[in-house]
Structure formats: structure tokens, C-alpha cells
Length: 276
Length: 276
Image (cartoon, rainbow over all chains, first blue to last red; front, side, top):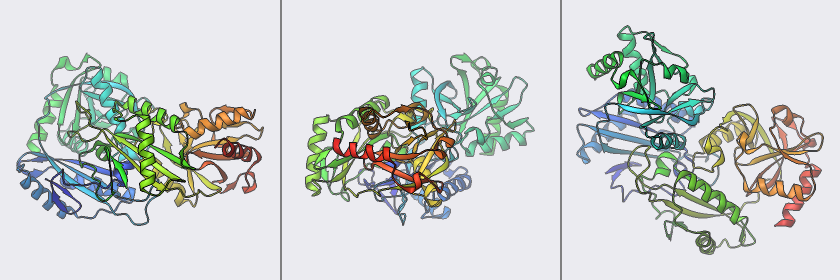
């Protein structure tokens, strides 16, 4: 069962209108939420990014955070996924007349769908791909439905035999992975992650890790990362709501920390687990 | 009536699957076709771009050019739009499992919808917007469903009181308009348009105009255009399949050619009309 525009229905019976601007033009946003021990993790932070993105795009959000909480609980029940799950929330500008112009009155489409949570691989290999992230675009700060570049980046990495892609921006600085933020520990022991201005999506887990690192009195900085920095990194890991902190054990076939999980990564994983 | 996945149906009865990757991730492409005197204009050129884009994205095209011709004819008949119309063709990778990874077997969604043709305004005003086109992305060469940047560019132009947006690329060169290619005539009388490498979509009408200009022995060149070039242009016009050649009479409120249609623009409009 999914939730679509105010009611629960079977996916086969659910109908996205063929004039939906999400379908025709990618005119919408989404969030991917992790349900852990029956609780949505960091719902408030996701809600904040979601509503800020919607406000920027001028798409009305036809529900409150409280509505969402109730709907997710019902959605999980109906799908017998009350303990561990993934929820995807999608909002589009809805159906409208042909063309790019904004409709006079938006009639947004919104959808929530639940999926079983599959524990991610403990470690991954990464590949620096040719596709560039446009850090100059306002979309770099929004989890929009325009995900084709990320799809192509992932495809390029997979074709090279790796699990995940690392995207550089127009200045050849590291921006993020195809579906995650990236952190590295320098040879000097500093934990660094690209600033938002370099094209990093403002990830909820990214911010959580920065906060955890500060709490652990680690030397942590948001600063530009070059490909050389990646080559010389002591540790590298990825973050998102589903993988939390996922160690990268090689980049372009060059092993990182002898393909083992480094001490700072382990410390942060333990802290994240303890924080819940 | 629209055509969706092999059958004609009413839009209200048509159902895009809620797991369609076109809807969730913008994972697909489209074409906008002009029907003029009952004929689809430049169908072969649109078909070529469409199939090349699909091949790049590895989305199978489950129909031939001949199938499409027949379907469009039926679609126009069913909508009583046999003479003048707009047809939008959409192809997505279809429904798939959650996430960015490509499904093992694609089950593409394809749709054709017809709309009445509204004659475009004879002239338009344009605005150079802050949103940058990423000329480094392979998507710059593909008419993909990732149109949110163009939507935001258009919104920015409209908020500034103009009709259409002009987007620069990461090098601050002119790339294109939100929904059209751009040409200008320099003070020296040279017709210029941004090269594809600057982020211009390979527009069917763009190429037609280049060919027409060559046929008229006009001095025509694909070369980078700066904002200064725009400021100093003798004439500026936009091209796409619906507007064909649309004069721009002001950019950021600065009049072009005294807000009148320039002689080279008029000559090309006449040639385009004669070519049909």
C-alpha cells in the first residue's frame, strides 16, 4: 500500500496523472527516511529541508509534520513494516498546462511509500566519475526529482567495477557521491567534508556526523577537497539516511586504509549508533 | 485522449505507475513536436535526437518511427486536432526498484499527448538570469525530464517582468533560453549561435536555421557568446519547434533593434515559412 494524495491504495491502483509536472518535468522534491525501531530518524531535520525546498520552488505543502507522522505510522502498519523500513516522501507541483510556466494555482501531488530496509554493505568501493555536479545551481541544495545526473554517475561507477560514484564540481573539487555525502580524514587526522558551496547536498546525516565529530572533540572542517586529497586520504566514508556512515575502502582501485575501516570512522560509527 | 503504453485512453483514466522512474527520478526523455497542416514537422530529426538520447541513457525505445507516425495520426484524429497541434512524446525507464541503480530489465513507459497549437507571441522580451546551465553535463545534450533548472530560470525571468530567460553556462557564456535556442546578429552582421559545447541543446530548429542561413549565403557561425555580445547585438531571436524563429526585442529592458524585427531575422523567418 502507498499513500497518494490523501488516501491509501495499492500501487497498481494508484494513478499519477499523465500531466503531472513531476512526471513531465521533474518539478518536485523528495526525502528518503529511515525507520529504525519503529521511529523515523531525524524526522524534524528532514521536514525542515523538505519544507525549505518546497518553499524555494513555491510548491505548497498540503500537510503538516504531525500529519506526516501519523501517515507514516499508518503506512508502516499497512505494509507490516513497523520496525525497520525505508520511507520515500515525494511532492510535485501536480498536473498543469503544457510548458515551463508555473500554473496559476498549484495542485500538488504528494506520495509516501514504504519499503523493507536492507542493511547496506559494510564497506564500498568508489570511483571518481566524469559527470560533474553543478555547484552553481540552486538545485545543488535541493533534493529535487532531477536525479538523472546522479543515475548516470552511478552507472559510470558501476561500469568501472565500483559500487558508488564520486562527483567533482565545475572547479574539479569533490562535491558528493551519487546518493551520499562524502567525508575524508586527512593524513594529518583532520575530518573534512565539502562545503555546501562546493555542491554537497545539505544531508541530514552529514550534519549529524559534523555534530557528532564536534562532540567527540575531533578536528572537523567543511572545506574544499581535491582529487589529490582523496588520493592521500587516511580514511574516507559516505553518509546518508540509510547507510548512516559507510566506509569507502578503495577509490579508483586504490586501497584506502589498507581496505579496512579506519579508527576515526569506527569512532563515529559507534557514536552514531549510541545516538540512535 | 492520450496514448500510453500501447493504448489510447482518457488522461483521467491513464495511470502512471507510482514507482515510475520518470516520476521519481526524472529518468527519461521527451520531444515536443509541431504539427503543421496535418504534418509533423522535422519528425526524422526529432526521431534521431530522441533515439540517440534513449540509447545514451540505455532506455529501450519500444516503437519505430513508423509506429510513431501512425500513433500521432490516430492521436490527432481522436483529439480533433488534425491540422495544427503540438505533440509531446515522453519516454521513461518505467517502474523499477527503489534507488538509483538501473533495473536489470527496463520496462519503459511511453506516452504521446496532443494539444492545440497556440500561435506564439510575435516578439518577446528576455532576461539574463542567475541560474547557470551546466555545459559540462551530458544532460546538456539531451532533452531529458530534468527540467527544473529551466523552470526556475523562466520563473526568474517572469518575476523580472520578461517573457523568457537567457541562461549562461559555468564560463559565463550564453548557453540557451529556458525553452529555446538563441541566435544573435552581431553589429558586423554575423549570425551567431552558441556551440553545443557551451551548453546549447541540439535543437532541431537551431540546426534548420543554421542550414537556412547557409543556403541564404549569410555569414553564420557557432561560437561562444558573451553578455557583452548580447548587449551589442543588432538582432536577437529564439528558436524551437513551436516558436520557429521568435525575435527578442529587449534583454534586461535594453531594447534590441529599437524593439523591431531586424532584417536578417525577417529574411530567416520568410525562408523558414517557405521551407515549411
